[in-house]
Amino acid sequence: MDWLPFDLLALNADGTVTVSKDAAKIMDKISMLPSADAESLAAGAHDPFQIRIDNGSGASARSFIGASNPNQGPFDLSKLTVIRAPGPEPKALDWAQGGKFYRALIPAGSDPRAVTVSNVLDEYSRPKPLREFADLEQAGEEGWFFDQKERTLYVSKKLATNVNALKDILGIVYRQPGTTTMRVQGGEAYFENILFLGVLPWVLNASGLVSKAVFKNCAFWYSPGSGIANEGGYVVLDGCEIYRSRDHGLVSRKSGDTQPKHIVINTKVRYAGDVDTYGSTRNSQSGLSMNDSGLAVIMGCDIRKSFGPNIVDSGAGAGSQGISWWYGVHCEESLGTHPMNFGAQGVRTVWMEHCSEGNTKGTSVRVAGEGTVLHHANNTVGKFVSDKGGQVLHFSEV
Image (tube, rainbow, N blue to C red; front, side, top):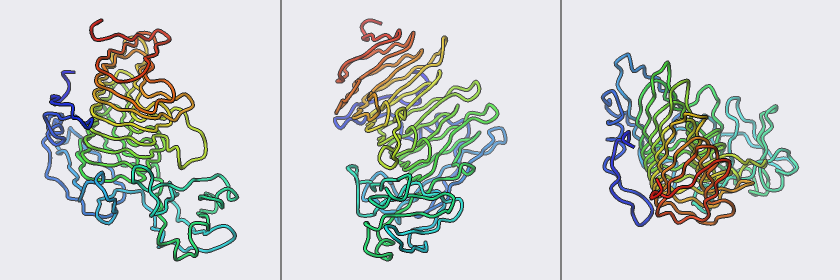
């Protein structure tokens, strides 16, 4: 683990960890270029933007600092810096009544991602989404439906007594068009105190240049894909939250010959796979995922209710050099068809220390695939299951 740009100092009673460098200093350590002065982003909404910095051009890394930490309540959009998929607010829409529904025309390029009621929160004090349905008849009972061809959003009339009352309580999160994904490509960026709402941040290498992105006190809600996609990049999350991504929470995979790295510190992941807002069953969306020969460190994190394994790392084929260190990771209540809190598969070595679990409904820890090794000590988890050549060894056996 000599590639880590910090030292571990302590495992705290609340499950978090203390490390020797904060996120800004970690950025300085991994950055090949001096960091430019921060761009202050005002509170309020900002449309997604792209960052493409050519390391060979002499350009500096860019820092984007938001107004306040979105992970500290109470949640108030007006006081936060929000990078969001473009789309009109509910009050700006022209609503009409008819049958079981309120309906409104949605402009092109602003497909609804989630619909919420402002005074209904889930168990994490986050806006609880209404159920999305595939037809009008079901939506009229308790949810919403979007007709893509007619570009009309239908919302159940059971939510409010009239149109004006609906405008006051409704919230809409829009899907981000794929061509405007917020991306760091061939460059370096530092983000702090920013909520990414309905946006898919993408970190990827470009022409062999490894992109580097650090997120401090950031939140990623209702991503149309993974909460964060990392392809051949270097990603650091510190004190962040990933909430109701349509796909994995954070997924890292190689791009070309470039292997990814990610460091995730004191970060929470909730509902990877978006189990509550979409009707169809999903079975493979993990909270945190590292693939191929990439390097991963997960420390002091809390991962719950993924619609698949809460955390799973995999190696690809003989010769994979993938290594992970899971330290102080807590997982609960994987919701897939075959629930699993921890998973290591393929040709990969995972060092697992001080990890814990709760509400186990299936497999605690599964180690599968020829050559996979899981080294563990001081873990309070249930059964370790090994199959298809997977090995489970205690530190003392190495």
